[in-house]
Amino acid sequence: MERELVSYVAKALVDDPDEVEVNVIEGEKSTIIELKVSQDDIGKVIGKHGRIAKALRTILSATSTKTGKRIVLEILD
Image (cartoon, rainbow, N blue to C red; front, side, top):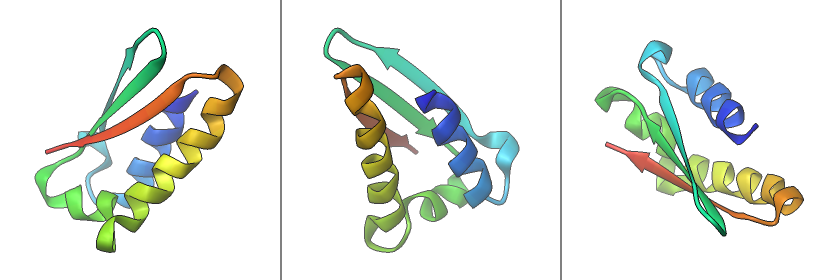
């Protein structure tokens, strides 16, 4: 579910939605979500002063209360 959420939001923000890649790495106590977008779109996903990235992380932490696992969003360049 988290993969689809991150993918949907990222594709809505960027100019080149075909370049959006989301990888999920499941751990015992945490889940790492890696988001990769084209080089030109990194700023759009991070936002001014990291506001969009922070908002995405907040949404993910709210969804993680169901599973009890910690979710970490990493934006790869």
